[in-house]
Length: 137
Image (cartoon, rainbow, N blue to C red; front, side, top):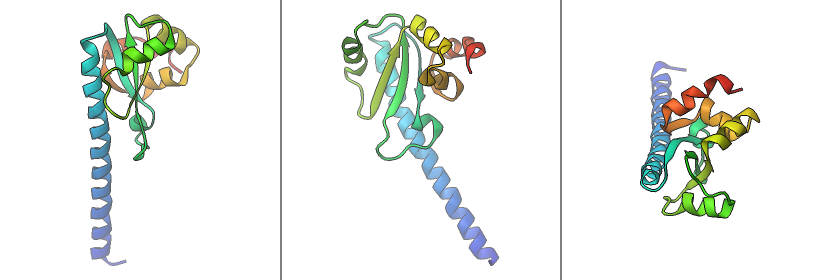
């Protein structure tokens, strides 16, 4: 393979990686807007993007999965989802926990909770996640 072809392929690969990173950052920005809106309505403790967007293996149909930890959330799941999804941008899929629930789920090694600590894109509450790192898998 000649040097010109190698250079062209390298440039194409670099452009593809840059485009993929830009797509991921656009999805993370959707999550950030969502979390900012939650701060007005909930006693937010922490939030992180998990799933395919955090891992980087998302596709055009992927949701932006956001783990939300709030001081107060309705007990009933339908009510909780109503609170979390009210006014949420398209593509957001929120999973809500109180701090005690999050801690209990971490002890049980709930995959979403563990992922939010290990590889989640932290949007709010860095101290909360960092304080639990000794309990993670």
